[in-house]
Image 1: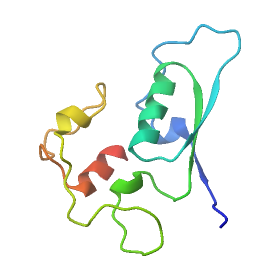
Image 2: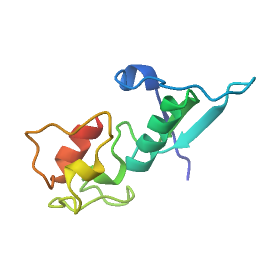
Image 3: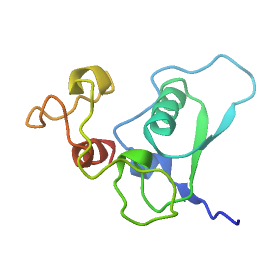
Image 4: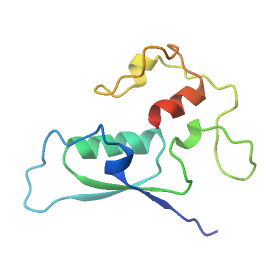
Length: 117
């Protein structure tokens, strides 16, 4: 099975993230992150925070990974249409990018994707 990946432009997609520290090295580190779901976005944020050049490879044309519901069969993993997170928004958000206060404490999956976007 051939998989086509979309290259996500990190600086245009996530302009609010910027390096806060640089890894002391003579050669700039480069990282490829597979998938733009929760873990991939977290890995990307850490790379940006540490001044590491990163690129995300995502097989879909959107971010959010398993959190984005899809009724299409055979496409891979997905949450149920009714899935709600089982941890509070305060515990799951990035420390420097809080989830909007008008979102429910335990968000529906569509709000998780909205936060990621």
